Image (cartoon, rainbow, N blue to C red):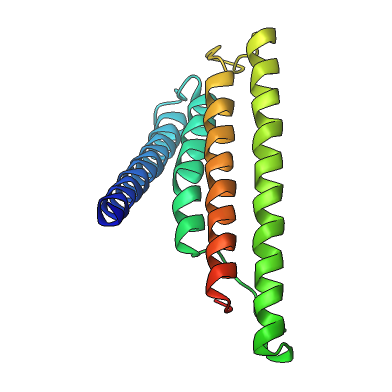
Length: 163
């Protein structure tokens, strides 16, 4: 059963990163087309800002849980030499718990913002696309990342050693 869950998680991570890459390539193509259209033909792409905003948010937040799960975020280790192994364990555990609680709180807050955007009918500026689906997506991804960090903190505590 554990092997199945691990394979499924690995497959979901691959799909998420592939979708993030597709969004990033689409954003790059949109920018190139915008520059060519604007300066070559004096015809900018209508609604490029709205599309770029959606593609950028999607590319960032599709990769966010994978980076969190794999512990691949940027770490600054300027003071690591000052901590003993035991102190480093408690420091890392505290940072992981604090980050998990913070992400969970932010995810909850984003769900409230998405509800407000939905009830008020907030749309994008040019294309009048509703913004609440994107905000719900971001809230969901942030909550997943917070939950993954909570699971990592529990595993870290059970193992009893610094990463």
